[in-house]
Structures are given as structure tokens and as C-alpha cells.
Amino acid sequence: MNFSFAGLHGTGKSTIAKTVAQHFNFSYYSTGMAFRELAKEKKMSLEEFNLYSEKKPEIDKELDAKILTLAKSGKDYVFEGQLPTYMLGKLQEFSILLTCDEEVRIKRMMERDEDTYEDKRHETLVREESERQRFIDLYDIDIQDSATILANFNLIIDTTKLSIKTIGEIAIKALSDIVTP
Image (cartoon, rainbow, N blue to C red):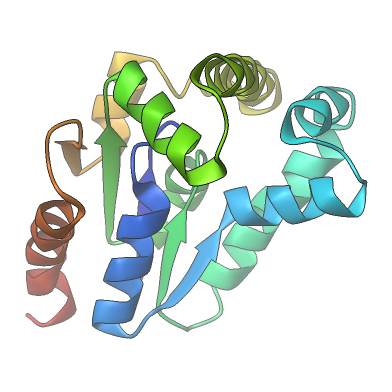
């Protein structure tokens, strides 16, 4: 059984996906974490690695292929990232998109990373535009297109004013009937 969580940076997708994976005793996989590890290996910032990845499509292709391999493994997974929902298609039972106002997203990441608001905002917006364009170029998927979003997600949760506890409860409730029919 496979579930996926998506959303722009700072929407809470990692926290909620981990909460759901732990609740149902599923394995957890984050393409964002895998991407960060590759950036660290190359001794690059996320912004630098995003720009580097624009010229190296094999990086995204490798990360995205791993999602499919894991999804077909027979283990239960919660996937989290920008593209897993689109990559998995019928290999997933349910997909959740988390949304949030930009200012709140930036403040969350700023506090987490101990960065200034302007530095975090610049880094995040550059990164998101780079990812968006790479995904359009590689897969013809616009992760910010409303019609594409509505066609691919079972549930959309705006996390702007909700607590982590409440968001987790909503996600777990939505998935409970699928896990234990």
C-alpha cells in the first residue's frame, strides 16, 4: 500500500508524512531528503544544487525511478516530495496535497533553519521555480497548475492556520478506512 504527500516547501509535508508513516507502521521515503543528501555529497547549497540539477536531468530521473522501485517492492510506503504523487499514479492508494500561505511557509523554514526571512524567502522561491521548470521540462508536469493538482490529489489541506496535531489527525482519519477497511 502506498500513500503520497506533496506540497511546496514549508507546508508541513515531511512532518505529516512521517507522522502518518509512524502511525500506520509504514516505511517513509522523502525525495527532498534524498536531494539534500546529494547536495551535501557535492558540497553545494540547495540553491547551488538546484541550479546544477537543471543541467543534469539524470539526477531527478534517478530519484524519481527510486520511488517506483520502492512502490513496487511490496512494502507499505508513505512517500513525500514534489513529484511522488505524479510518478506513482495507480501505484498509490491515496494522495494528499498540503498548501500554505507563502509568508507562513517561509517563517516556518526560517525558524527551522535559523535563517533570516529574506534569505530563506529568496532561497525558497529560487528553488521552487527551478524545480517547477525542471519538472515541466522533464515530465511535462506543472506542480502548480490547478487542473493538474485537482486531477491528481484525493485530498487538499491548507495548513496555514492548523496545528501539526490537527493536520496529522485529518490525514490519519482520511487514510484509516483505506488501511483498515
